[in-house]
Image (cartoon, rainbow, N blue to C red):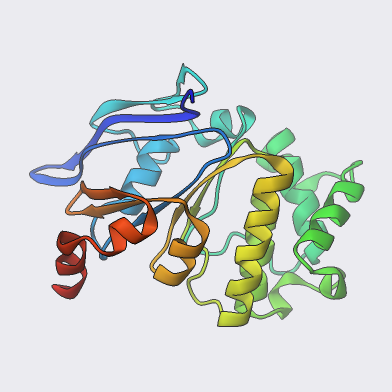
Length: 247
């Protein structure tokens, strides 16, 4: 299988501190890959290096055979690469539906378009489909800021999928979300993977979620890949257990 995403010996240093230290991995078409590791292991720095928030010190990132190293987030989104952040990226005063429409406007155009374009802009039907998929119809008309943190997380993730991206990197989607919504999030991601065929890379501390969702798991420690493979193999790795128990 030809890799969809190729991360090749990516490094990010801040002076003498090696936040990411020679990380390499591949993601195939339609594959879901989990990234785990103790706090400070370099997971989010790796994401930011892949997605253009920061420039890697060295190494390369390829997407569908194209070198995307150092491309801006906007350039990447137009190539079909999306992401979510640890912190919410929703407009609290807009309705759930308008948040989704605004997200699609950003992917199609500019941030100004996201903020000031006319409501709907021909995107309402697609927004309604995502609302149905994420089980948000009963709150679609409400301001996003009036909903629970977990519901806002679902909105945030749905926004990332409004452009039907081919690759999405999700940074701690379960953080702060109650268990019932975690189960719902798992089901929605599985459904999106089946219906849209995209690939996902997921950073998460919720081990049950990762082990259930991801057929392939990577464990990072001190900026390096400590172990990778099927969930049970990684979860049972002695070095992985020591890394977590030592924190």
